[in-house]
View 1 (spheres, helix red, strand yellow):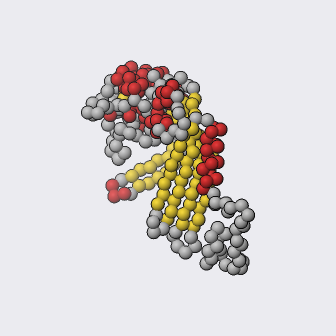
View 2: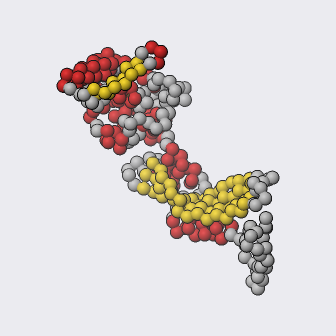
View 3: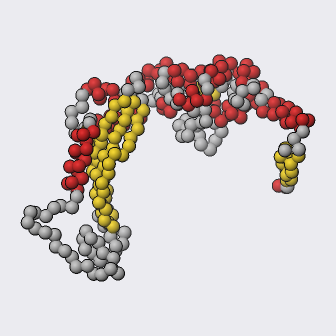
Length: 307
């Protein structure tokens, strides 16, 4: 079936369906080729006739190239050849997902994409070969004066300037509770990727029954994994101590210390947890039992307050 939508001035339109015959299919293909894959249509997104000829018949229509302007642009036959030399999965594995960047760092969100702000596909291919993903390439695209760097300069900067993973590692190392070997510090500052996962958490929160007031403390243990340029993995463990107080003197905070081994970090976490737990009474003394006001009265077992 062929779905037809016809509109006219004044907002009036009509919709109907027709059987898909061979003649209608031929007309549809001719229109798609003329208006969707013509050299003029490719020129609108900056691709010349040689690039258009190479991309004709592929999945990279002018409309697709327009969406790619958030990531890369095609200008000539070299770009077109580089674009099709990798599969979409290979581009994605290299950090250049052809589905578009989820958080474009170089294009306006509510305006047409500017091809002048894009890396060419041949440049993106060079970055991919050097292990530099799209976010990193655009992070280093311009220098302090706003000038666009050459590809070789970006690759050099990538080796000299820590990326987001490296900066995270440096921040954790600044909170180290033990001496960190210089070799490990150097490796972590050059990390390519970073992931984190909460290993353990303990908290003790108290919410007042008499209004928006309360306080609480917590102890958390988080593992941070860093992937090095050679593919090796290094891990750090962070032990955090948090507190919050909501009331007249509202306050909140969180402090953390970093450890190199899981065993040492777990011991430190247990120490923080035990410190924050309800203090134990001296030996020989028992905590007084508060009389229960009854099953119909809400009360707090920690402080004995009732409502």
